[in-house]
Image (cartoon, rainbow, N blue to C red; front, side, top):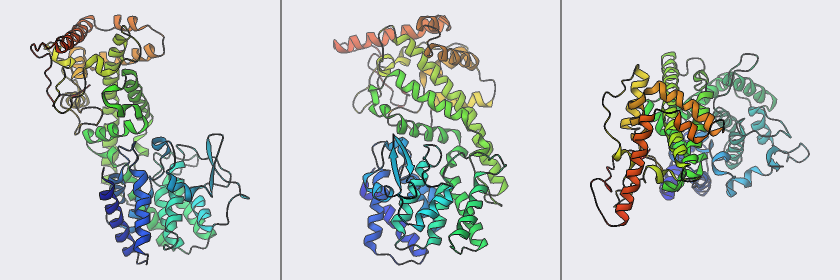
Length: 467
Protein backbone atom coordinates (compact mmCIF):
# COMPACT_ATOMS: atom_id res chain seq x y z
CA UNK A 1 0.00 0.00 0.00
CA UNK A 2 1.17 3.49 -0.86
CA UNK A 3 0.53 6.04 1.90
CA UNK A 4 0.43 9.10 -0.35
CA UNK A 5 -2.06 7.46 -2.72
CA UNK A 6 -4.39 6.33 0.09
CA UNK A 7 -4.04 9.70 1.82
CA UNK A 8 -5.16 11.53 -1.32
CA UNK A 9 -8.11 9.17 -1.76
CA UNK A 10 -9.18 9.81 1.83
CA UNK A 11 -8.75 13.56 1.45
CA UNK A 12 -10.96 13.56 -1.66
CA UNK A 13 -13.65 11.62 0.23
CA UNK A 14 -13.51 14.17 3.06
CA UNK A 15 -13.77 17.09 0.67
CA UNK A 16 -16.70 15.51 -1.15
CA UNK A 17 -18.59 14.63 2.05
CA UNK A 18 -18.13 18.00 3.75
CA UNK A 19 -19.15 19.69 0.51
CA UNK A 20 -22.32 17.61 0.38
CA UNK A 21 -23.10 18.58 3.98
CA UNK A 22 -22.44 22.23 3.11
CA UNK A 23 -20.10 22.80 6.03
CA UNK A 24 -17.11 25.09 5.95
CA UNK A 25 -13.82 23.55 6.98
CA UNK A 26 -10.26 24.60 6.33
CA UNK A 27 -8.30 22.44 3.90
CA UNK A 28 -5.52 22.09 6.50
CA UNK A 29 -8.01 20.51 8.91
CA UNK A 30 -9.18 18.00 6.31
CA UNK A 31 -5.57 17.14 5.52
CA UNK A 32 -4.95 16.53 9.23
CA UNK A 33 -7.99 14.23 9.42
CA UNK A 34 -7.02 12.31 6.28
CA UNK A 35 -3.63 11.55 7.83
CA UNK A 36 -5.30 10.60 11.13
CA UNK A 37 -7.50 8.06 9.32
CA UNK A 38 -5.01 6.56 6.90
CA UNK A 39 -2.09 5.98 9.28
CA UNK A 40 -3.72 3.29 11.47
CA UNK A 41 -5.36 1.70 8.42
CA UNK A 42 -1.89 1.05 7.00
CA UNK A 43 -0.39 -0.66 10.03
CA UNK A 44 1.81 -3.67 9.12
CA UNK A 45 -0.85 -6.14 10.27
CA UNK A 46 -3.68 -4.84 8.10
CA UNK A 47 -4.50 -7.15 5.18
CA UNK A 48 -8.28 -6.82 4.92
CA UNK A 49 -9.16 -3.81 7.10
CA UNK A 50 -7.24 -1.43 4.86
CA UNK A 51 -8.04 1.96 3.30
CA UNK A 52 -9.67 0.18 0.38
CA UNK A 53 -12.11 -1.47 2.79
CA UNK A 54 -13.27 1.81 4.33
CA UNK A 55 -13.81 3.37 0.90
CA UNK A 56 -15.94 0.39 -0.14
CA UNK A 57 -17.96 0.41 3.09
CA UNK A 58 -18.76 4.10 2.74
CA UNK A 59 -20.19 3.84 -0.73
CA UNK A 60 -20.43 6.95 -2.87
CA UNK A 61 -23.94 8.31 -2.41
CA UNK A 62 -24.33 9.57 1.16
CA UNK A 63 -21.98 11.96 3.00
CA UNK A 64 -22.80 10.65 6.49
CA UNK A 65 -22.15 7.06 5.41
CA UNK A 66 -18.86 8.05 3.77
CA UNK A 67 -17.61 9.86 6.88
CA UNK A 68 -18.71 7.08 9.22
CA UNK A 69 -16.98 4.45 7.09
CA UNK A 70 -13.70 6.39 7.04
CA UNK A 71 -13.53 6.14 10.83
CA UNK A 72 -15.34 2.88 11.64
CA UNK A 73 -12.19 0.72 11.76
CA UNK A 74 -9.50 3.20 12.82
CA UNK A 75 -9.32 1.40 16.19
CA UNK A 76 -8.99 -2.38 15.89
CA UNK A 77 -7.15 -3.77 18.88
CA UNK A 78 -7.36 -7.44 17.84
CA UNK A 79 -5.33 -6.57 14.74
CA UNK A 80 -3.04 -3.75 15.82
CA UNK A 81 -2.58 -4.84 19.48
CA UNK A 82 -2.55 -1.17 20.44
CA UNK A 83 -4.19 2.16 19.68
CA UNK A 84 -2.35 4.31 17.16
CA UNK A 85 -0.51 7.04 19.08
CA UNK A 86 -2.23 9.87 17.19
CA UNK A 87 -5.68 8.42 17.93
CA UNK A 88 -4.97 8.13 21.65
CA UNK A 89 -5.06 11.94 21.92
CA UNK A 90 -8.83 11.79 21.33
CA UNK A 91 -9.50 8.65 23.40
CA UNK A 92 -7.58 8.92 26.68
CA UNK A 93 -9.68 11.76 28.20
CA UNK A 94 -12.60 9.32 28.25
CA UNK A 95 -11.15 5.80 28.43
CA UNK A 96 -8.42 4.27 30.58
CA UNK A 97 -6.75 0.91 31.02
CA UNK A 98 -7.23 -0.97 34.28
CA UNK A 99 -5.51 -4.33 34.81
CA UNK A 100 -5.27 -5.00 31.10
CA UNK A 101 -8.87 -4.00 30.34
CA UNK A 102 -10.20 -0.82 28.84
CA UNK A 103 -13.03 0.99 30.59
CA UNK A 104 -14.88 4.26 30.37
CA UNK A 105 -13.68 6.61 33.08
CA UNK A 106 -15.85 7.15 36.13
CA UNK A 107 -18.15 10.16 36.18
CA UNK A 108 -15.85 12.21 38.39
CA UNK A 109 -12.93 11.58 35.99
CA UNK A 110 -14.76 12.48 32.79
CA UNK A 111 -14.70 16.00 31.36
CA UNK A 112 -18.05 17.71 30.92
CA UNK A 113 -18.57 16.81 27.31
CA UNK A 114 -21.98 16.64 25.64
CA UNK A 115 -20.66 14.99 22.48
CA UNK A 116 -19.05 12.15 24.40
CA UNK A 117 -22.24 11.57 26.37
CA UNK A 118 -24.21 11.45 23.12
CA UNK A 119 -21.83 8.80 21.75
CA UNK A 120 -22.08 6.71 24.93
CA UNK A 121 -25.87 7.01 24.89
CA UNK A 122 -26.09 5.79 21.28
CA UNK A 123 -23.94 2.77 22.13
CA UNK A 124 -25.86 2.16 25.35
CA UNK A 125 -22.67 2.50 27.39
CA UNK A 126 -22.36 4.11 30.85
CA UNK A 127 -19.66 5.73 32.96
CA UNK A 128 -17.23 3.21 34.43
CA UNK A 129 -18.22 0.45 32.01
CA UNK A 130 -15.60 -2.12 30.96
CA UNK A 131 -15.31 -2.32 27.18
CA UNK A 132 -15.45 -5.82 25.73
CA UNK A 133 -13.36 -6.85 22.70
CA UNK A 134 -16.37 -8.22 20.82
CA UNK A 135 -18.97 -5.97 22.42
CA UNK A 136 -18.34 -2.73 20.55
CA UNK A 137 -14.98 -1.78 22.06
CA UNK A 138 -13.31 -0.94 18.73
CA UNK A 139 -16.39 0.70 17.26
CA UNK A 140 -16.97 2.86 20.36
CA UNK A 141 -13.41 4.19 20.40
CA UNK A 142 -13.53 4.73 16.63
CA UNK A 143 -16.75 6.74 17.07
CA UNK A 144 -15.11 8.85 19.78
CA UNK A 145 -12.20 9.62 17.44
CA UNK A 146 -14.58 10.48 14.60
CA UNK A 147 -16.72 12.82 16.68
CA UNK A 148 -13.87 14.59 18.46
CA UNK A 149 -11.87 15.00 15.25
CA UNK A 150 -14.80 16.58 13.40
CA UNK A 151 -16.77 18.37 16.12
CA UNK A 152 -15.27 21.75 15.22
CA UNK A 153 -17.09 21.83 11.88
CA UNK A 154 -19.94 19.30 12.18
CA UNK A 155 -23.13 19.78 14.20
CA UNK A 156 -24.38 17.43 16.95
CA UNK A 157 -26.96 16.23 14.41
CA UNK A 158 -24.22 15.20 12.00
CA UNK A 159 -22.22 13.52 14.75
CA UNK A 160 -25.22 11.58 16.06
CA UNK A 161 -25.86 10.19 12.56
CA UNK A 162 -22.20 9.27 12.06
CA UNK A 163 -22.04 7.60 15.48
CA UNK A 164 -25.18 5.59 14.72
CA UNK A 165 -23.62 4.27 11.52
CA UNK A 166 -20.42 3.31 13.31
CA UNK A 167 -22.38 1.54 16.07
CA UNK A 168 -24.19 -0.47 13.39
CA UNK A 169 -20.82 -1.79 12.19
CA UNK A 170 -20.61 -3.94 15.35
CA UNK A 171 -21.15 -7.27 13.57
CA UNK A 172 -23.41 -10.22 14.32
CA UNK A 173 -25.41 -8.57 17.08
CA UNK A 174 -27.84 -11.11 18.61
CA UNK A 175 -31.57 -10.80 19.14
CA UNK A 176 -32.28 -9.43 22.63
CA UNK A 177 -34.31 -11.30 25.25
CA UNK A 178 -37.23 -9.03 24.39
CA UNK A 179 -36.96 -10.03 20.74
CA UNK A 180 -35.37 -6.86 19.36
CA UNK A 181 -32.69 -6.91 16.66
CA UNK A 182 -29.55 -4.83 16.94
CA UNK A 183 -31.05 -2.34 14.50
CA UNK A 184 -34.26 -2.02 16.52
CA UNK A 185 -32.30 -1.48 19.72
CA UNK A 186 -30.20 1.19 18.01
CA UNK A 187 -33.36 2.94 16.84
CA UNK A 188 -34.66 3.02 20.41
CA UNK A 189 -31.40 4.47 21.74
CA UNK A 190 -31.32 7.08 18.96
CA UNK A 191 -34.79 8.31 19.88
CA UNK A 192 -33.89 8.43 23.58
CA UNK A 193 -30.60 10.23 22.89
CA UNK A 194 -32.26 12.72 20.58
CA UNK A 195 -34.81 13.59 23.23
CA UNK A 196 -32.46 13.63 26.23
CA UNK A 197 -29.85 15.88 24.62
CA UNK A 198 -32.24 18.11 22.67
CA UNK A 199 -30.62 17.37 19.33
CA UNK A 200 -33.90 18.11 17.55
CA UNK A 201 -33.79 15.50 14.82
CA UNK A 202 -37.24 14.95 13.34
CA UNK A 203 -38.82 11.51 13.30
CA UNK A 204 -38.10 11.35 9.59
CA UNK A 205 -34.42 12.18 10.15
CA UNK A 206 -34.12 9.49 12.84
CA UNK A 207 -35.79 7.02 10.52
CA UNK A 208 -33.43 7.86 7.67
CA UNK A 209 -30.43 7.65 9.99
CA UNK A 210 -31.29 4.03 10.75
CA UNK A 211 -31.51 3.32 7.03
CA UNK A 212 -28.06 4.87 6.55
CA UNK A 213 -26.69 2.65 9.34
CA UNK A 214 -28.22 -0.45 7.73
CA UNK A 215 -26.67 0.33 4.36
CA UNK A 216 -23.24 0.87 5.89
CA UNK A 217 -23.46 -2.24 8.06
CA UNK A 218 -24.44 -4.42 5.10
CA UNK A 219 -21.60 -3.11 2.95
CA UNK A 220 -19.23 -3.90 5.82
CA UNK A 221 -20.14 -7.60 5.70
CA UNK A 222 -21.11 -7.92 2.04
CA UNK A 223 -18.37 -10.52 1.52
CA UNK A 224 -20.60 -13.04 3.26
CA UNK A 225 -23.15 -12.54 0.48
CA UNK A 226 -20.60 -12.72 -2.35
CA UNK A 227 -19.64 -15.78 -4.43
CA UNK A 228 -17.84 -18.41 -2.38
CA UNK A 229 -14.42 -17.82 -3.93
CA UNK A 230 -14.58 -14.11 -3.01
CA UNK A 231 -15.82 -14.96 0.49
CA UNK A 232 -12.85 -17.30 0.98
CA UNK A 233 -10.48 -14.65 -0.41
CA UNK A 234 -11.70 -12.29 2.30
CA UNK A 235 -11.28 -15.04 4.89
CA UNK A 236 -7.68 -15.61 3.80
CA UNK A 237 -6.96 -11.88 3.96
CA UNK A 238 -8.34 -11.79 7.50
CA UNK A 239 -6.17 -14.69 8.73
CA UNK A 240 -2.82 -12.84 9.05
CA UNK A 241 -4.49 -9.87 10.77
CA UNK A 242 -4.95 -11.93 13.93
CA UNK A 243 -2.29 -14.58 13.23
CA UNK A 244 0.77 -12.43 12.74
CA UNK A 245 3.15 -15.38 12.44
CA UNK A 246 1.67 -16.16 9.00
CA UNK A 247 3.21 -12.96 7.67
CA UNK A 248 6.61 -14.65 7.84
CA UNK A 249 5.94 -16.51 4.59
CA UNK A 250 7.89 -19.77 4.37
CA UNK A 251 8.95 -19.77 8.03
CA UNK A 252 5.64 -20.35 9.83
CA UNK A 253 5.16 -23.77 11.33
CA UNK A 254 2.55 -26.36 10.46
CA UNK A 255 0.93 -25.93 13.86
CA UNK A 256 0.76 -22.13 13.49
CA UNK A 257 -1.13 -22.43 10.22
CA UNK A 258 -3.31 -25.26 11.51
CA UNK A 259 -4.26 -23.31 14.66
CA UNK A 260 -5.11 -20.25 12.55
CA UNK A 261 -7.47 -22.33 10.42
CA UNK A 262 -8.99 -24.00 13.48
CA UNK A 263 -9.80 -20.61 15.00
CA UNK A 264 -11.41 -19.54 11.73
CA UNK A 265 -13.38 -22.78 11.54
CA UNK A 266 -14.66 -22.23 15.08
CA UNK A 267 -15.70 -18.68 14.21
CA UNK A 268 -17.48 -19.83 11.04
CA UNK A 269 -19.38 -22.51 12.97
CA UNK A 270 -20.49 -19.93 15.55
CA UNK A 271 -22.16 -17.65 13.00
CA UNK A 272 -25.88 -17.46 12.40
CA UNK A 273 -26.48 -16.39 8.76
CA UNK A 274 -29.69 -14.65 9.85
CA UNK A 275 -27.65 -12.23 12.01
CA UNK A 276 -25.07 -11.18 9.42
CA UNK A 277 -27.10 -8.69 7.42
CA UNK A 278 -29.47 -6.00 8.67
CA UNK A 279 -32.80 -4.79 7.33
CA UNK A 280 -35.15 -1.98 8.23
CA UNK A 281 -38.42 -1.12 6.52
CA UNK A 282 -37.48 -2.07 2.98
CA UNK A 283 -33.74 -1.38 3.27
CA UNK A 284 -32.58 -3.51 1.58
CA UNK A 285 -35.50 -4.86 -0.42
CA UNK A 286 -36.70 -8.32 0.55
CA UNK A 287 -35.38 -10.04 -2.57
CA UNK A 288 -31.88 -8.67 -2.04
CA UNK A 289 -31.89 -9.46 1.67
CA UNK A 290 -33.01 -13.07 1.13
CA UNK A 291 -30.40 -13.49 -1.61
CA UNK A 292 -27.64 -12.29 0.74
CA UNK A 293 -28.78 -14.54 3.59
CA UNK A 294 -29.01 -17.58 1.31
CA UNK A 295 -25.57 -16.95 -0.14
CA UNK A 296 -24.13 -16.41 3.35
CA UNK A 297 -25.63 -19.72 4.48
CA UNK A 298 -24.10 -21.45 1.47
CA UNK A 299 -20.73 -19.76 2.03
CA UNK A 300 -20.63 -20.86 5.66
CA UNK A 301 -21.40 -24.47 4.70
CA UNK A 302 -18.75 -24.43 1.98
CA UNK A 303 -16.22 -22.86 4.35
CA UNK A 304 -16.80 -25.60 6.94
CA UNK A 305 -16.06 -28.35 4.41
CA UNK A 306 -13.18 -26.42 2.85
CA UNK A 307 -11.52 -25.58 6.17
CA UNK A 308 -12.12 -29.09 7.51
CA UNK A 309 -10.35 -30.56 4.48
CA UNK A 310 -7.35 -28.28 4.85
CA UNK A 311 -7.17 -28.79 8.63
CA UNK A 312 -7.07 -32.58 8.22
CA UNK A 313 -4.33 -32.19 5.60
CA UNK A 314 -2.31 -30.02 7.97
CA UNK A 315 -3.04 -32.33 10.91
CA UNK A 316 -1.75 -35.32 8.99
CA UNK A 317 1.41 -33.50 7.84
CA UNK A 318 1.94 -32.20 11.37
CA UNK A 319 1.61 -35.69 12.87
CA UNK A 320 4.12 -36.95 10.32
CA UNK A 321 6.48 -34.05 11.07
CA UNK A 322 6.58 -35.04 14.73
CA UNK A 323 8.85 -37.88 13.69
CA UNK A 324 11.41 -35.17 12.94
CA UNK A 325 10.79 -32.80 15.83
CA UNK A 326 8.46 -30.12 17.16
CA UNK A 327 7.49 -26.89 15.44
CA UNK A 328 8.54 -27.94 11.96
CA UNK A 329 7.92 -25.28 9.26
CA UNK A 330 5.24 -26.26 6.77
CA UNK A 331 7.66 -25.55 3.93
CA UNK A 332 10.00 -28.27 5.27
CA UNK A 333 7.36 -30.94 4.74
CA UNK A 334 5.67 -29.86 1.52
CA UNK A 335 7.92 -27.31 -0.18
CA UNK A 336 8.40 -23.57 -0.19
CA UNK A 337 6.30 -20.84 -1.69
CA UNK A 338 7.61 -19.87 -5.12
CA UNK A 339 9.62 -16.69 -5.31
CA UNK A 340 10.82 -14.76 -8.32
CA UNK A 341 13.61 -16.66 -10.05
CA UNK A 342 13.34 -19.75 -7.84
CA UNK A 343 11.23 -22.83 -8.58
CA UNK A 344 11.44 -25.11 -5.55
CA UNK A 345 10.37 -28.74 -5.53
CA UNK A 346 6.93 -29.37 -4.06
CA UNK A 347 5.29 -32.41 -2.50
CA UNK A 348 2.42 -32.82 -4.97
CA UNK A 349 4.96 -33.20 -7.80
CA UNK A 350 5.90 -36.55 -6.26
CA UNK A 351 2.40 -37.94 -5.72
CA UNK A 352 0.97 -40.54 -8.14
CA UNK A 353 -2.06 -40.13 -10.37
CA UNK A 354 -5.30 -41.34 -8.83
CA UNK A 355 -7.32 -43.90 -10.78
CA UNK A 356 -11.10 -43.67 -10.23
CA UNK A 357 -10.95 -40.50 -8.10
CA UNK A 358 -13.76 -39.66 -5.68
CA UNK A 359 -16.80 -38.03 -7.29
CA UNK A 360 -18.62 -35.31 -5.32
CA UNK A 361 -22.03 -36.38 -4.04
CA UNK A 362 -23.73 -32.98 -4.13
CA UNK A 363 -23.32 -29.38 -5.30
CA UNK A 364 -21.56 -28.28 -2.10
CA UNK A 365 -18.93 -31.01 -2.38
CA UNK A 366 -18.51 -30.21 -6.06
CA UNK A 367 -17.90 -26.54 -5.36
CA UNK A 368 -15.48 -27.23 -2.51
CA UNK A 369 -13.47 -29.66 -4.63
CA UNK A 370 -13.31 -27.05 -7.40
CA UNK A 371 -12.12 -24.44 -4.89
CA UNK A 372 -9.46 -26.81 -3.58
CA UNK A 373 -8.28 -27.83 -7.04
CA UNK A 374 -8.62 -24.60 -9.02
CA UNK A 375 -8.30 -22.16 -6.12
CA UNK A 376 -9.82 -19.04 -4.72
CA UNK A 377 -9.80 -15.85 -6.79
CA UNK A 378 -6.49 -14.55 -5.45
CA UNK A 379 -3.21 -15.70 -3.97
CA UNK A 380 -2.60 -14.50 -0.43
CA UNK A 381 0.77 -13.03 0.47
CA UNK A 382 1.54 -16.03 2.72
CA UNK A 383 -0.23 -18.72 0.72
CA UNK A 384 -1.38 -19.50 -2.78
CA UNK A 385 -4.90 -19.95 -3.92
CA UNK A 386 -5.32 -23.64 -4.70
CA UNK A 387 -4.60 -26.71 -2.56
CA UNK A 388 -3.14 -29.66 -4.49
CA UNK A 389 -2.36 -31.79 -1.44
CA UNK A 390 -5.85 -31.40 0.04
CA UNK A 391 -7.26 -32.03 -3.44
CA UNK A 392 -5.23 -35.25 -3.72
CA UNK A 393 -6.45 -36.45 -0.33
CA UNK A 394 -10.11 -35.69 -1.05
CA UNK A 395 -9.94 -37.35 -4.45
CA UNK A 396 -8.41 -40.45 -2.88
CA UNK A 397 -10.55 -40.94 0.27
CA UNK A 398 -13.58 -38.65 -0.24
CA UNK A 399 -15.18 -35.93 1.86
CA UNK A 400 -16.88 -38.26 4.36
CA UNK A 401 -13.59 -39.86 5.34
CA UNK A 402 -11.91 -36.45 5.45
CA UNK A 403 -14.66 -35.24 7.82
CA UNK A 404 -14.15 -38.30 10.04
CA UNK A 405 -10.40 -37.74 10.11
CA UNK A 406 -10.88 -34.02 10.82
CA UNK A 407 -12.63 -35.07 14.04
CA UNK A 408 -9.67 -37.32 14.87
CA UNK A 409 -7.30 -34.35 14.55
CA UNK A 410 -9.12 -32.86 17.55
CA UNK A 411 -8.19 -35.95 19.55
CA UNK A 412 -4.61 -35.68 18.33
CA UNK A 413 -4.13 -32.07 19.40
CA UNK A 414 -6.02 -32.59 22.65
CA UNK A 415 -3.43 -35.38 23.19
CA UNK A 416 -6.12 -38.05 23.53
CA UNK A 417 -4.25 -40.07 20.91
CA UNK A 418 -0.60 -40.09 19.89
CA UNK A 419 0.70 -38.93 16.50
CA UNK A 420 1.48 -42.53 15.59
CA UNK A 421 -2.02 -43.67 16.58
CA UNK A 422 -3.43 -40.89 14.44
CA UNK A 423 -1.35 -41.93 11.42
CA UNK A 424 -2.27 -45.60 11.98
CA UNK A 425 -5.96 -44.64 11.92
CA UNK A 426 -5.69 -43.07 8.47
CA UNK A 427 -6.01 -44.85 5.13
CA UNK A 428 -2.72 -46.72 4.93
CA UNK A 429 -2.43 -46.53 1.15
CA UNK A 430 -2.77 -42.77 1.44
CA UNK A 431 -0.21 -42.72 4.25
CA UNK A 432 2.30 -44.63 2.12
CA UNK A 433 1.83 -42.39 -0.91
CA UNK A 434 2.33 -39.20 1.08
CA UNK A 435 5.31 -40.55 3.01
CA UNK A 436 6.90 -41.70 -0.26
CA UNK A 437 6.23 -38.25 -1.70
CA UNK A 438 7.85 -36.51 1.27
CA UNK A 439 10.90 -38.79 0.99
CA UNK A 440 11.22 -37.98 -2.71
CA UNK A 441 10.92 -34.28 -1.87
CA UNK A 442 13.75 -34.65 0.63
CA UNK A 443 15.78 -36.59 -1.93
CA UNK A 444 15.24 -33.80 -4.46
CA UNK A 445 16.73 -31.36 -1.98
CA UNK A 446 19.70 -33.64 -1.49
CA UNK A 447 20.23 -33.74 -5.25
CA UNK A 448 19.74 -29.98 -5.53
CA UNK A 449 22.29 -29.20 -2.84
CA UNK A 450 24.79 -31.51 -4.56
CA UNK A 451 24.18 -29.77 -7.89
CA UNK A 452 22.32 -32.64 -9.51
CA UNK A 453 19.24 -31.73 -11.54
CA UNK A 454 17.14 -34.79 -12.15
CA UNK A 455 13.61 -35.07 -13.46
CA UNK A 456 11.27 -32.69 -11.71
CA UNK A 457 13.40 -32.37 -8.60
CA UNK A 458 13.55 -28.60 -8.71
CA UNK A 459 10.60 -28.02 -11.02
CA UNK A 460 7.75 -25.78 -9.92
CA UNK A 461 4.61 -24.73 -11.69
CA UNK A 462 3.83 -21.24 -10.40
CA UNK A 463 0.12 -21.74 -10.95
CA UNK A 464 0.01 -24.50 -8.34
CA UNK A 465 -1.02 -23.89 -4.75
CA UNK A 466 1.23 -23.96 -1.76
CA UNK A 467 -0.93 -26.04 0.54
